[in-house]
Image (tube, rainbow, N blue to C red; front, side, top):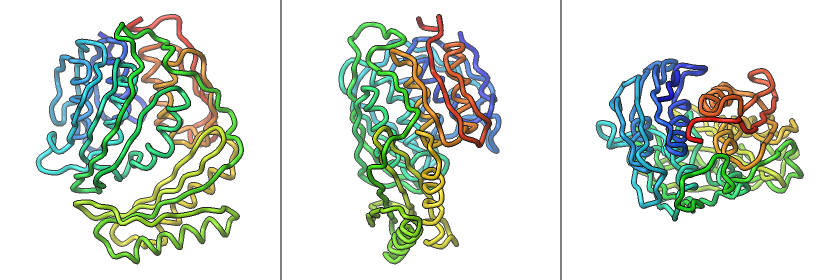
Length: 365
């Protein structure tokens, strides 16, 4: 039993999700204590419970402590990850609807299912465009293309958009497994290592101004403000305007830049009393800050790639526009399973780099 301190670093849900994924992949039982101790409402919330149940189903795990507000969880994988058809609904772990992030739930099971034998169809219901998590568009435009460069093939479509507070969004993902039906070997030849020190030439910049059940002028104003902010700084961009189907109300500006070696994405969400122009300006400011630097990965992709690169059949390295608490925490969580494998260089909030090698031993080997 590997005991993991869930209060380490930022003390959020990242340690839980990374631990569940690596436990499912390696077969190593884990006990996580102090779950989300650093949050205003500690313990398991609906989206975290859904992630636990998702990980449980894909590897037939035995679980103790999977209840609302629990700060301790034991997870005992019963098998290697199994491909299949799955539906995970955050509302089932909440009273009524929930806007818990489906993106974070998908990231818990995607890599394990990519190492399973066969193709998986995964439907997720909940929040698709909510705070503190990558929106659906980030996964589609930035995260999945990064995984594809490693040899992990997955596709996504969105049926309904889910906003805070009622959620109800629905996305579907198809994950192509690369396993052979035999126990997973770590490092795994199915995942290619990456060396991303430079982003390469800029190919294109695109944007999205979307809203649901709100006046059309809001998303049009967002579009105009995003075009003005970027074009006045020499960035040629096209922004699509979308009337998004949803049970709830919400608005977003999402901007992404595609380079030879990578992609980067930035979002800003609308809220009551926040002008549409300000939503666009927030997203544009993030993108412009990234473009002024020379690091390969945006600050969000950096922490999301640590887990899959940990499993790659060769050492990896990348530079990032900023070292974040998420990156440092995720590196620490991975190193609980594979001591010394991940090294982050740089101060929090400043540009840095991450190297991922191969420890001599680790759980599940």
